Length: 351
Image 1 (cartoon, rainbow, N blue to C red):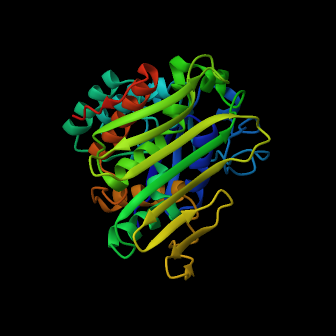
Image 2: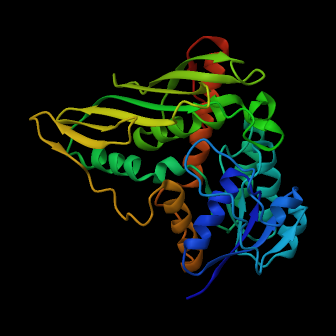
């Protein structure tokens, strides 16, 4: 079986998470690494922290057979990697993504895909012009409970959706990243763009394109001026009440929460803050849905396994996302930021 070779840019929380997943996948190998930090290029991730999951960072990574670079552009041009995986701060995503596509590489890029709609337009054009595969790190689409809930609703077994709420509440990530970039509104876009994007994107993924959004947010609670907590109601024009809430204002002693409740005609499907995932039928029956392969426990595992399989088999990926659907999700959250900033309902201008 062909080995899929990875060139990884950035070895922070997401980069080191991806590294460990690739290590565990059969016939997948990180062959090149680019990072500005010489300690990380030597495999030292002891200072890497995150707000959810992650492995033991005390032991150095196995760098055997890995070519290392300080300059990511140099790595892109020199490596024979099949996939360039981009895990750097958001403002740098577009330049590496464009360079990798131009070099004829398949691209996996972490979220948010870019910082603004101007960069998005450039990325959209490059992806459409390329014959290479492209996926973004919208891992919630592949997260076992979320993917299962979407499939249950789509099956029609639960009946029509009446209301749904999605929540993503993180402890503060102040001090958790290189140069504390999450706390810069200019770089990260606040919790609205960096954290809440997951649920906005999943709403679009599950229910289709909302026509308009009404969002309310608070700025500068922990970051310099970003929207650090946001609540949004989505207008689909059909009377359904679909809402989301996300933020990273709490102290770092507060547990991370990702949860949802989807109320349908015949049953409610719920992922609790405690991680309990159930279907509660109106008749009183309670079920635990099958979420699939337990050896792939997170959306990170499932999205990367799927994408590397697609590259190996030369099959265009479409199970969890298409480029256009990713572009729609980012466009949606940008409209939410505009709505929260203006204090008024905003129609979403999809391309």
